[in-house]
Length: 112
Length: 111
Image (tube, rainbow over all chains, first blue to last red):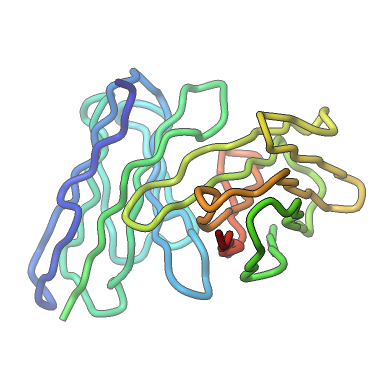
């Protein structure tokens, strides 16, 4: 089954404790991206990657890091999480030519 | 900067009613427009994709239209069912493959 898998689905952490949210896709897609969804603000892109070792900032990259060492994986790293990063996070992937049709189930992160 | 607005923010209708969800965008230089469905605890499911050269797309009871010149898209749902209850998101695709999302319309279809 074609899918984008995020882990964990739910996470509560404390300010300043480094964390990684993993994202993996099994469709051999070149393009992957991360979004955060907040009430009143909708979904906003954090980072995206057009292929292995190629990443770029989206609209709200501050406080986040990403890496793309393998085509299937695109982890989101919060080096020093803060409460304003409490949000619902989505990973997405698509083929190079095509719409961004595949989203993960989301990771609800709470930073206290 | 592209801005996407969806109206209404919430909608409650009785089962069987036909309904229209609206999406407007400020920059007409788009590559495509997509409608997604979001269910609680689940990710986004792509419903319809309209390329910038197209005027509409249909899938089952869903029909989406696109008017680039006026910066508008509509999602028409025929004969609504309780299972259609979800949040519907409009997203505009532009250069660099970025998607700009609206805040969504929360639809409730009452039995």
